Length: 239
Image (tube, rainbow, N blue to C red; front, side):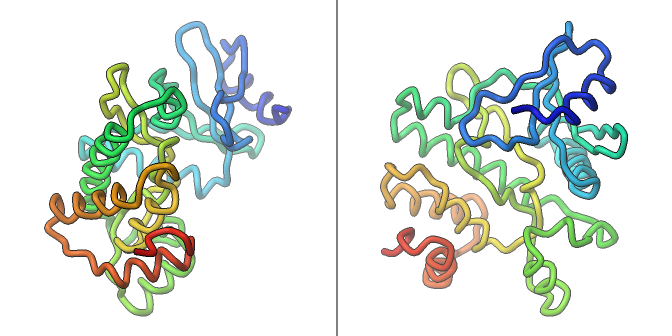
């Protein structure tokens, strides 16, 4: 059921709205609604003010570096903060998987997404912007402050539902700017492993690791990576 406060906030922010619907994606957060106006559809995501400002900042920063992400703006109605961006009609990889997308194409598309995340990892964040909200977790924030652990920007929720594809299955962008935050490379890769399509082979995932090594010139400590991955999901990356 749509939150009536969210509906009221949207209608008062966009007077031309004639309908408000929920995203037709299984498992989508209940704080996301789509506003239908005569000219376009607008995605509205309600969250804390600090999260909204993080999403907008990351969006602006990545777009300035020619990375294909939504153009996010912030709205505020009666103390309710929410981000807005134009709805993208392209399907997600998750939707295409449900329609029977071949395994080799899934792997290829993930490689394209990893290429974009590598570009994201090379975007510099000014020291004054590195607040708690810029990190993937409280532990990451503490580790960076106390131990000076090397961290970069990564998309820490890279899964099929956050990868957009064009009509010919070409990569068309990433969703969920709240998940673009500071963390370590191993933590990023472990998050990819946990959410990689379960029916795809483990060999496919290790192929992604090799792809990352190729594009980044970085060598992955596989034993260290396996230990992190197994803490998150014991059955993944066990070989």
